[in-house]
Image 1 (cartoon, rainbow, N blue to C red):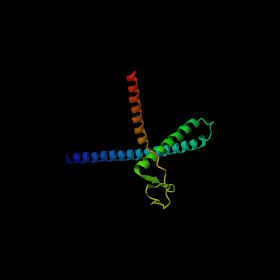
Image 2: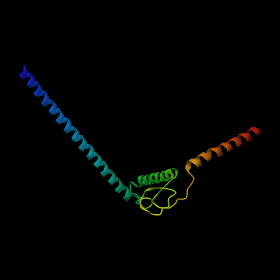
Image 3: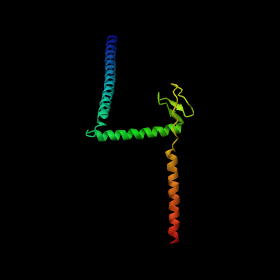
Length: 148
């Protein structure tokens, strides 16, 4: 009886060891696949950026239209970042790219003199003012129509 029990324990231990090895190998391969896929995506991005850089100046390129879309999207992103910086009260250092308080004259990271931008009106203020004006015009138009 003890001999069968020992044999069973030995078989069970071997089975557990085999399963552990399988799980370990699976995990390692899954990780390697993930790393390889990320490397592939990086290569695609590098290739795409190279194609973009060449095609954006060539109006005959089949990718020229997409390049214009990318450039327009980047302009949109840059404008939103500027608005965000205004809201946050920061200036981006033109030398090192660090965020600096708008009241600072010099960058706290590299020491360069900060260029103070002229504060344009924030879009939210402009958008808020526009509906109020439209409402007043609409009200005035209704008053004229009521007199007729």
